[in-house]
Length: 623
Ligand code: GTP
Image (tube, rainbow, N blue to C red):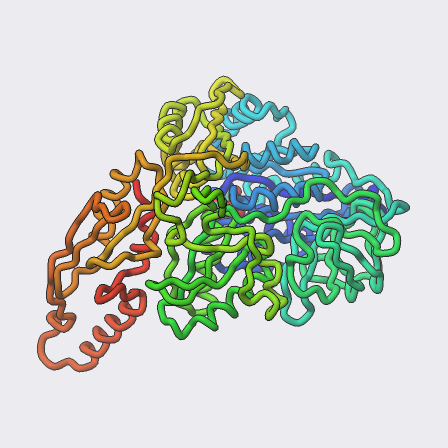
């Protein structure tokens, strides 16, 4: 296909506004995927994604479409929809010239709509507004169009009314893609520069890289060079995504495709990296590459200590596919052997945990997420708590697969915090956060930010009904339920973005939890002094709810050093699961006992007390 007949676009939308349904309809209408081979929602193909209804990883599809007798090649690049993955969204948008902005005609502009539109505008994309779900009785296309014009400032005079479900407006959309989105510029003569917008690990062929050729051409057999990871490989296979992989000889500037080159880990070919030729390197890489910086850490421990090797293997496998996942072995007196893992954010953490449990059949205990503190000791020494600049000796040389883990950092534990007399100060990471919200929720969100030790910076109106609030906030206050709170307080309408701004000294102390008189290390947290009492109280109350009663009385205490600041107690109980069973129905008895045994698996024994998984998440979910 000649370059003027190529269109590269993506679909941006708030969750549930119909992105996947529309993508499917486009594939079906262009005959790219036959109806009978169409799984529901072709583009979202990870099980977990489908269940949670969110797009996590990117995919792409090439469609053939004839408009006014002229054949076109339309490349649809999918984007993930969550704030944890906004870097990946921005990279896939950078691979496009245009975007379909899908807005639910019965809902209107929502948080993710805005966040995504801004990313699209930053990337200079031509935006085609699509009002979806016009078949719904509650659809109000006029009101929603006005809202889009007002809030985003887009001209909606040529917006398309559509029902992805009923197939209304689909050809209008395809025609608009051809007519309104500009073709790529033909820069095939320049040295190769291709932007990676997705990559995944295939156990047979190694990493498969999805990319958009920005300049130059690339073909099978070429020696390519990744400008960020500085690795070079020979191209084994090159092709297009139709949407299944289809081998071709060569790809030119403007085209979208995949490469396989016996690459062993996605960390070597990360989203945002630039591919060039080894012997004719581009002068500069494409803009916008960022290292994956884990912002949130937690410990993962197998419930059954024998599963430690399996957990390691599973993490290694997941990491082949997820360059943002970092991990390092850790031991804990309470939990035994496990790993401290670093994630982009909380959703990323939950996804990894769920995949480990579901796909690898592991029972895990997750400790409360934490950030990296900087501790200045009275000896003049400074060290990072959870992460340390010293070399991490564990496992690295032995296993090249994980050599990229924490190459600059070393993890330790809250228990490593020196006694108060030995430390001068603790510094914590701060972020600048910007929240966009309809004006009705301004008060509630300001309260939220203030409650989380936020320092007010700025408020401005971006539209008559919409404001932007800027705060400086400790990252630790954000890794908890901040995002959930923002969503629920604003009925889902507010969106947020944050950037790391640096470290600052703060009045932080270590809060310990003792269960049945024994300190439970994984429950220890670092908190601000002013919050120790309320957190201690809330924590002990929560643990009391979550820990099943035992056959003896169990005290639950929150302590600062040796001082108990809050305390609860579980009263004793004798639990007989067979009490419900009358007579001698042995199969039912067995079933109940089996169920109880399974329930037990999810528990971790702390001394004589079984503590369920939820308890370890309690520290995070406190109100
Ligand atoms: P994420 O993957 O979470 O971003 O969601 P999405 O934007 O891909 O939404 P999806 O396509 O999964 O659609 C969400 C829901 O809206 C589904 O239940 C669809 O069946 C429904 N839906 C999508 N398009 C239409 C439409 O045109 N009309 C009606 N009535 N329902 C629709």
